[in-house]
Length: 119
Image (cartoon, rainbow, N blue to C red; front, top):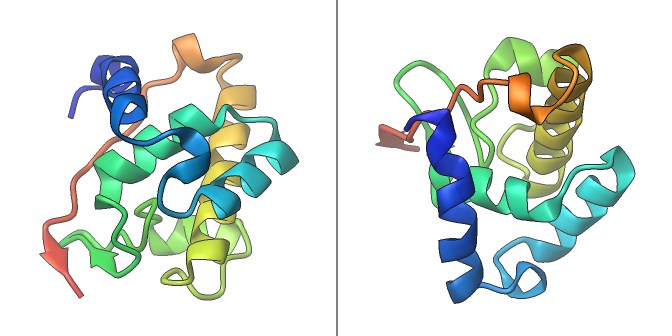
């Protein structure tokens, strides 16, 4: 999926899920509040990356709801990538790092993938 499509996905998702009623809403909101990220963006990322499947596993090795790669998971202190709490918090923490590193979301190209294989 192309990064420019994420903003188009957010309104569509919000028609079907209020952010506070979406799957894993409490975990998403907590992580987003902790790291200063808009929960709507994370909701869209989780939908696109794993379709809310905590056991999603890509053929490239990306794991869990936010499709963390093993190295990224280690760097973000995620011990169990299939744990919704740990995966979302680690993914949001990494997103915060990328936004800070690239001076804002408009300069950041999100590497979106889709799960190719279910665990």
